[in-house]
Image (spheres, rainbow over the protein chains, first blue to last red):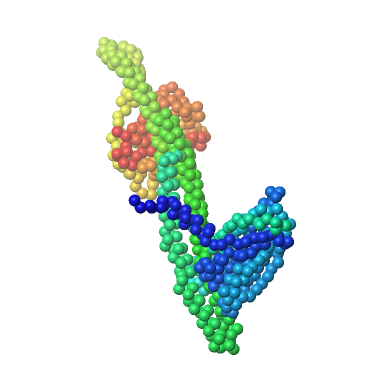
Length: 215
Length: 406
């Protein structure tokens, strides 16, 4: 009699697979606070590679939280924006860490970008608040475009919905023009604001803070 | 309200709305959106950007112009990619707006339907109460629903029916009352006729017995008794006439012509009266018995003549006027310019023996007989008006024989 895995077991394995597919980053305590390093190698993911090549600003948003010795919840965040300039064929990387410092670098190739990502280190939870943390929950959301691009598209979409005002949409737009101005604007607003920034990928890890290095 | 019916209607509306939404999303909004973000457009824009870059390399002088076009194209491409990324969210929002619009329309329609149903229920309740009152014999009902729809028309019919029933009840009561009077008169006449006949026979025998000369005085007494008996006989005959009033033998006549003939024939019948008739513009067909109408007109003119004779001046005019009465009838108005009818007699004007005349000037049966004749025609005789300037009566007749009372 052959052994056959139960269907639920297969489903469980498939569901658990993405969690273990990406290597977790590392954290350490430093003078400025909790520092994140050895960022997960997500540039190897096909979706991320494809997204980075579109020319849109891909945001890598890190969020961290943990409880200190007193039981208080401590939070922190950092963000890396990567935009590929299709004309100059360079990667423009902007990093903002938990201290509020911003750094901008320009990289000529995807390989250099991957190297920069691998070597990047930045503060995820600021200084004194990090004291007494035993572990940190780190979440990473890959957002396919920036807020500025979202707003720009919302504006463009709203104008496209009321394109008849430019006088180029013909009979259909003339029919739309007959609607009350306020009603049309409300519909446009409702439709335009349906454009959000859903994450392309999401990861989360619970990382123990190595003892003896806490500040 | 019928809850089951309302639920069925509401379910049907919701199903129809869901079907319309599904069809709209599947056949209209979905395809249009897919058309906007279809891969061919994206690849064409990408190719265009590559071309701009290639052109910039080959034509460096216009590099900035190519770059500007490149960036414009890239902006459009970015928008399309962001739209594609938000495809589900936009579709959900669109469906939500459609659903909200449909639900709003359904809510308004449902509210309107509910209000209309409640109003209809209230009107139907008024109809039900009206029908109960009608069955209880209440007269001249006023349901107060003036709607032009079916319910309003039914309310109008109930009101019409109650008025017709009131008229019929009044007519029936009058005829019953009159019938009692007729029976009384018949008995009186019968009781008086027998001794009268015997008295006449005895008187004749007395005259034969007193056939010798010198008995002139006895003969005069006998003659006087005979005259009184004759008078009593005529009196009895009036009772008989009233008691044995025949049914009218109606035929369709031109009312105007009949009245014109009456005026011409009876112009000199009452020395104190001038008869004046205003002929109608055209023929006025009416189902009537000419002889009985003549009898009614004679009664009315007799009354007028007596009233005018007793007033100052002693001369007056009776004006007759005919026309359409509505509801399939015609009318004839008879008005005099006498002293009018005394207020105390008006409520029982058409009852037998209702009179203000002196004893010996009539028994007060004329108007009762006239009313009975008109009712037997399927029409009526009413006092229209009475004042110090005169009295006027209105006679109504049906136009068709089938509407005339049997």
